[in-house]
Every structure is written in C-alpha cells, then in structure tokens.
Length: 385
Image (cartoon, rainbow, N blue to C red):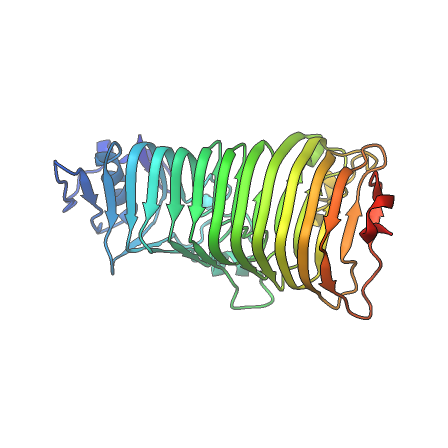
C-alpha cells in the first residue's frame, strides 16, 4: 500500500483522491512519471508509486520541484527503480509532524534509487525553534536495495535512517546541513542512522552534518563504512546503546579509508550507564582526523543532558565492549585539551581485547594524557602507558 499522510488524517491516495495526473505509464516498461499536483505533490507521488510498485520505474523529472505538504509512506515496493532526477521539497515546519517515522518512508525489496536529484529539507525553521522532534528525511525498511547519487540539504533532523533492513547499499550521496545562525545549530542531524539491520554498506559520500556521521545503533550486524568525508559532525559512532537499561547488541563493524574534518569526535563507541548487551568485532582503520576534539573515544558513561533522567543509572555496569581495533588513525587534535585516546569503561563490565596501532595524531601543548580506564590488557598497549 502506498499512502500519503496529511497533518490531520491518513488515507489511501488511490481511493480518496481523483485528479488529473498526466502520469505516463508504458505497458512494456511500467514507467510512471510523477506529475505535478495543483495542491500537494505528495498525492501525485503516491499515485506514481502505487501504479509502479511492482517491477516498475518511478521518475521524478529533471528541472521539476515537487513540494510536499504531507509525509509519504511508500510501502509494498517490489523491484522498483526510482529515478530521482528532480527536486523534492519537504513540508514547512509544523509540530504535527513531530516524532513521525519519516517524511519519506521506503518499504519493500529490490528498491534502487538513483538520479543525482535533490531533497530540500527546509530545516532552518526547526533549528530556529530549537525543535529537535522532526522526523528523519528518509527511512528505509527494505531488503536487497540501494540508494545512491542523490543530495539532501538542510535536513530538519536525521538525513537517513535504516531500520529493520537487510543488504542495503548507500553510496555517492552528498548531505549538507548547516544553520544560517550560529545561535541555532542543526542538532540531531545524523547523516546515517542504522538500527535493527544487517549487511549494510555506506561508501563514497561527502557529508556536512550537525551530529553523527554514522550512528550504528542496537541490533546491527555487519556494517562497512568506507571512503566517507565528514565535516563538522560528531564522528563515526557506534551507539548510543543501552539507554534506560535496555539491551543492545552490535557486532561486525568496519569503518575504513575515511576522513573527519573539524569534528567533535573522530571514532567513537558510546554506551549508557546501566545498559545491557555487547559491542564486539569493531575495526577502525586508515582514518584521517583533522582538528578533532576527541580523536579516539570509547565510553560506557555516555550522557545526553537533554534526557538527564537516563544518566542516573548504575555507572559501574554497561554493555561489554570487546574485540575493538584502531589501526592507522592519523591527523591532529584541536586545542580543547582533551586526550588523543580516551577509553573509559565500567568497573564491573570492563572493556577487553583492544588494539591500537599506527595512531599518529599531532598534539598541541595542552593535550591531556591518554586515558585507559577499566580496559583489560591496557598494560600491553603502548598508547595507554
């Protein structure tokens, strides 16, 4: 079923709306060109996806802007190509959208989105209102699918979220989110969030974001991140995990051949105190960190001051973090005075089986000494001595 959801109601577009679509469908190729609507282009988009949801191609025309006044639930897609040659503009800020699942939700299998198109997030009014409750721009719940070569600018919250998915490729995307007012930053604008998913590849992309370059969350197995340039974000992160005492498991993560410029964190694993579960088999290699505040950061004491009530759990336990390897991490640290390596684990659930090799971060005069707290085997790690 393909739906658009307005501010006040949810309907099936095919049943409740009758309008002239100018939608071209070729019987032999099953191609649906999205028409322009006189009211809400989400209506025409829903119509096109319904008509081409199986073995079809949906085309957003070049030099055409499709303005949404509703969110889109594009479900039941099977073997669908999405040629995003045009521009999609998200709705203006309205609190009725707060905490919805996404502005655009793709659900199905064998979805292939391509086309060098643009999604305009209209995020500035959300930043100015200090409103961090906007939905993600794109949510993917799919199998055996790829999303590439498109751009998102000024996302109101996360650019892209992958959830309940398997075998997904995200490639050659450009995400650029920045506020025009330094007093109102684009918070919570993660580039790519991954949760409850497996076999995910994120590669060959250029990011300017206000939060994590990657956020690899609970229930995730086998993720590869490569050839990513991230500017001004919060780093290549695993987590946060274990919030509110929840149980999370992450394993088989590889981040390699990537760069973080002016980021708050470089490579990071973050879990909440009192959390349960495990993080294992995580490899960071050939990462360049330029002017980064916290180059290598592992903490089981993560706390978000915006939800301080979750920070008061038992700080002596958290997820177990093991089999983690940092190799060829180079670049420079900022002048804030933080340590290059900061590994701070819980006393009753210490970290174990860590290696650090080829770490070459240029320090400044006030750089603190490295920290390796509650890390089993730290005496054998030169960066900890």
